[in-house]
Length: 68
View (cartoon, rainbow, N blue to C red):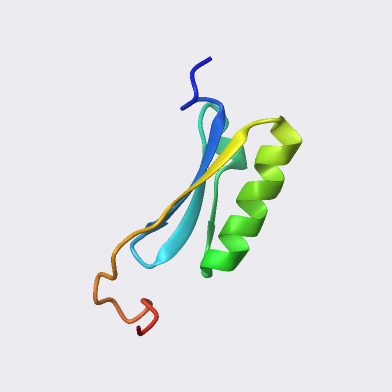
């Protein structure tokens, strides 16, 4: 397996934070907060023995983006 398939990726998507688990769509989840998504993504990666990567995104202007 490649690094991509052995990585849980946490990223922003349309105002929600998603954890994507390659090859295991049943483990992929969406969260309203970045912290919650990162915590769960890290836990899932640890349980699988995989890497966890957080992809930061630029603010989109949506009302769900925190003000800087």
